[in-house]
Length: 84
Image (cartoon, rainbow, N blue to C red):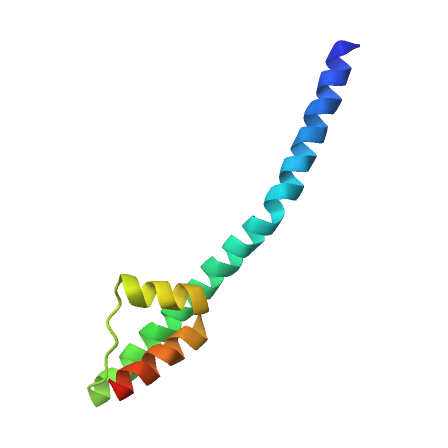
């Protein structure tokens, strides 16, 4: 009888953990997807821009901006590079 109670208690703890971690995990997955799309867009911008002498370096700062903001972050980097 005790093993059934501990099993049910373990299932309850597992459900609580899954519910508690679902939102941060969703946010993390959104951040990863945004970063991947931003990096792909930045790579395309560098390929197209190389024929015009336009290049945005891929480093920790640009990776952070594209990871946090995605494609709008890449657009910000383009505008920033043009006006800098």
